[in-house]
Length: 235
Image 1 (cartoon, rainbow, N blue to C red):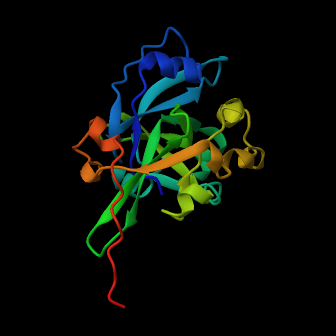
Image 2 (cartoon, helix red, strand yellow):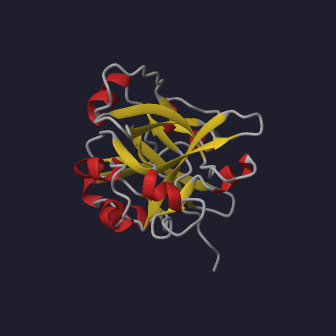
């Protein structure tokens, strides 16, 4: 799964990288430790005009038919292999796909019965990339429209397999247009966008346990630290 990530790039870089409209009112403060239920940036294709838009959506998808928001705690991720069939995701998979910009994400490996070592994963060159995302609009009991999203996951590449059995689906820059195209409703056409990302283009390194707590949101969360040794066993 993907339950924590970072996006530290400035607004101008995001605009250049993802090509959303120059006139769009963009407001993004770099974040080092983004957690579920928080508002996160998403990039979408405008449904009627040839341009992309940038906005914020709550992380944890709430289907339009949900009776309350609690389902969002269970839908921060969706399995790319089954999203087209799951009631919570299948409509969005056809009609409401988005890109979720990031420049790193965190996964943990257990090193003792009481401790896990967090790792940062990102591009080898440190560049910004994009998760494959889905988004929805849900009307809360007060009548307010709430936009929410999820990050799709896929099988891990060799770099991530050493830490976790899933990885976020990372969309290649060459596939942004296809993934975002609202005219593409046949999900078989976007299957290749969801393959495990090339491990040779990525890197990982251990980071501080500061990232374990969402309230810690600073550069120290992503700073490389010496890896802790796995605790020895008696048997």
